[in-house]
Amino acid sequence: MTKSFICRTDWPLAETDKGILRGFFYDGVYQFRGIKYADADRFEQPRPVKPWDGIKDALDYGLNCPSPEGPRTRQPQGEIRVPHRFWPEDEHCQFLNVFTNTLDPNANKAVMVWLHGGGYSGGSAIEISYYDGDNLARNEDVVCVTLNHRLNVLGFLDVSAYGEKYANSVNAGMADIVAALQWVHDNIRSFGGNPNNVTIFGQSGGGGKVSALEQIPAAAGLFHKAIVMSGSIPDDDGLVYTTATGKQIAEAIMEELGSPEHDFNVLLEAPAMVLEIAMGRALNNLKKEGYAIGWGPQKNGWYEGYVAYNGVSEHSKNIPTIFGTELCEFGRNPINDLNAVPEKEREQIIIDKYGKEDGTKLIELYKKAYPGVNILNVLTLDMMFRPTTKDMIRRRVKECTAPNYNYIMTLEFPVDGGKRAWHCADIPFAFGNALETPLCNIEGVTEHVQDQFCKAFTNFAKTGNPNHALLPEWKPCTEDELVTMIFDTDADARVNFDDELMAFYSTINPKFAMKFPAKENVKKRWLY
Image (tube, rainbow, N blue to C red; front, side, top):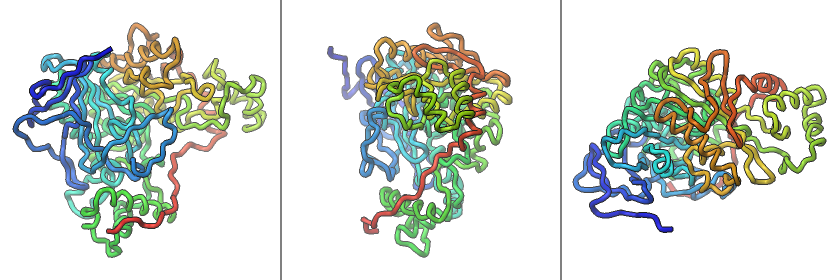
């Protein structure tokens, strides 16, 4: 069946505060791709783009931020679970994309702004195929915005020691996102959106960015609701925790760039991809010396720090927020086909690992928390995001006037005999793209789960309340009751359901920490 496609020299057009953009219309949705929302010199804060005359095309996705693990070096792996796409890279990567079903400036539709995953070092707005926002616009009647911003060394290296204009370089990547939200505030009416009803949502590193924005006063008034998907990332998590100073990291990179005298200009002049490679080599060397190195926002006055440690920023106390996680997240179960293991052998495997007393208690608590779920999934119980998510919620409910909601996805997917929800598994459902994602297709299940999950997000974006007719009642959390909506073949709301399990499990397992060990540096392959 053919679908309507229109792209003329004079339509569709949208007028922004800097000039007129031309997009295209496809299957009921207007798409404007690769809109430049800001410019920035290396390590400096973003600034507005300059106006232009005439009509500028917005037909192609914008450039991605460079990464050492980009398309030149990445090896395909795990693509059946998380299918990636790659695109040309450049450090001038401040681009966004808009998906909308109307260009009526009076439509006042809710706006959902997506922040991609990949920690604070990789990823892009188009990296994963199910990031596209056309189904949200077409079927859920919201305006969807996705965006790129600076990452890794380009977005989070602290070079404040080298000049006042670099004072907030350690948060430059987050400053890009604030600039993107400012663009949305100033221009989204031309795309049918309401600048006073903006929801930010993101997963993994994107969820961390959502959490960080709630702690950045400069973002006050630029968003009104938030959704954190597997992204409660403390400042001392291995993903962002750094023991080396910005100057130590900068000097190590300078040395890799051929400047043992530490000339700051080599950092400014090195081509971006050379800088990325030098960064990777320098970080490996620092890790071998015992330093922890991570990329991410750092508390400095502009960013007020992780909420569970520092309290809720004043501007976010009235922002309704949803926090969610997956049952297994990063867990890689040592047993490939859990459901092929006979029932009577499952308990023995757990007892063999944890001992009779602890193993028996763990089995009992897991069955109580997750009735009907294969108990071997306890071997991949999420101890990275679930505990920190609960910490963040409990801190917020004490200090916020706005409601805070919680969910966990436990759905089993038809891969390798059945795998429960892992890191990223909920994203296709959030975007309404599950049917376009092969492994999300479960006969008689997918459409129902997607309707429950996606409409919860879009209703929340529209009203601040995720409840809708297809869900059981989803109450906000309180100081005494952490209400969790469990998304499986059907949704079910439960209260404090895994407190005993998590408390006991933490006594028999070391705290999970994201670690990126040093690698062996290969021989230099560039001249600089």
